[in-house]
Amino acid sequence: MINKTLKYIGILSLAMYFTSCEEVIDLELPTAPPKLVVEGNIDFNTDNTPDTLSVKLSLTTDFYNPTTPKVHNAIVWIEDGEGNRYPFEEIKNTGRYINTKVKKDFVKNQYKLHIEYDNDIYEATDVLLSTPEIQQVEQRREKFFNKDYYTIRIYYKDTPRPSSNLNYYYSFSQRNNEKPELKIQTNEYSKNKIIESIFLDEDFEVGDKVLIDLHQISRNYYDYMSLLISTINNGGGPFETPITKIKGNVKNLTRPEKEALGYFRITEKQTVIHTIYEQPKP
Image 1: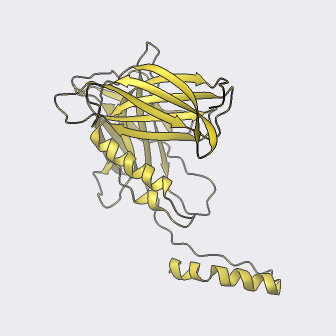
Image 2 (image 1 turned 120 degrees about the vertical axis):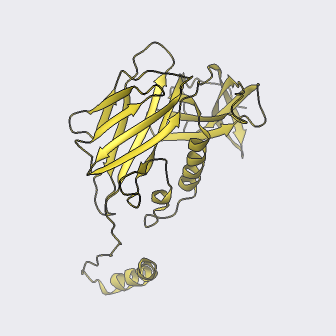
């Protein structure tokens, strides 16, 4: 039905233009029951600063709703590999649930997220892996397609794990708190070697502050992010919703047919902040 409706939008627009018609035409979009959306990005610091770990819960909504409904009064906890449970408390009706007491364990490293909401129980698991230190940050000014850009490179040492054929890495760069750049890679061709990650933003300017986070992640989260990044980069127009079809690891144990969206990941993060400085043109 929606494809047929969209087929005639151009014709309707032209007709309205030439006849100066003032009638408002409401485009009917299919609606669906709201689904739980889980943003369970649990990231431990590598320094001695306290870890404020958070899980954000919301609901899907229809296309025309300008606000995202937040989930309140949910029961949220994380269980570590030794069976210890850490309850998360909501901050002032924000839909954001936090805890500062979760212990970091790289040996018994499987963690479980548990959520109870609207008479449903949701659970997800992930494993915590140690993230290598960022050993060097390098800035260059390089020319691509007859235009010069500032680029940032980070370097870190890969350490192969006996229990895994490959290591998987996720990095995140953000300029002046604006739209972030996401990157994933493996150690397939750099086992036990120095790995280089390159960040290029055509808007980099002298004085910009660039935040870079590095995480070693599980294979499952790597696959999820690979699909998500591909979908974002190749996404269609506003009437396409491919991201909602990407399945995460959050399962509804009560009613499996009532799926949740989002992902629960648990990582250790390495963070650097780099300020862009003036360099000669290439």
